[in-house]
Amino acid sequence: MPDEHKGGYRMYVTLSLRDIAVGLVLIALVILIIYIAIFFKNLIRTLKTSNEILKDVKTMTEIAEKRTAEIDGVVDGITESISKASKSNVGSGVLAQLSNIAAAINSIIKIIGRKK
Image (cartoon, rainbow, N blue to C red; front, top):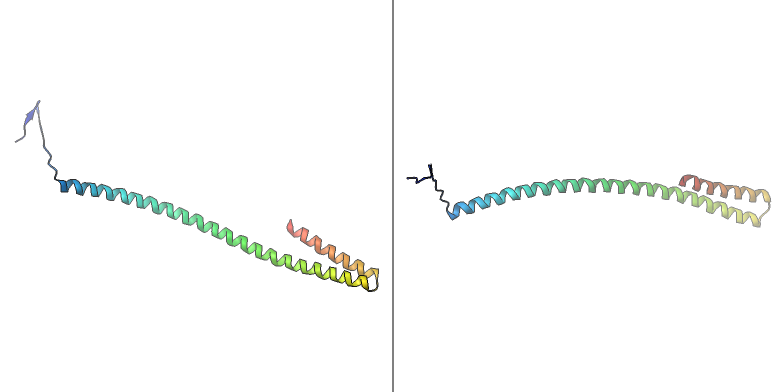
């Protein structure tokens, strides 16, 4: 029977150690679920950022590969022009030398134009 205390009733709550332990475990589970949700949210954001970075790296690699092939072709052209010029120095004429020099200058202009 409840005790009367200053015009009201007193209520008593009895908790066993098992009830307290179950309550603490439930609170810990709620905190763990919140932590896991935040963890996965951050993980998804990190994975999206990593995916964007990998796409950028792939694009840059493709561009570098294409430019390397272009430059390789231009360098081959310059090498050929210089070799022709050196051979023409040994040979006959001024006209052949000027033609080879013009080809070398044209190759250099192509390199400069592609860099822009």
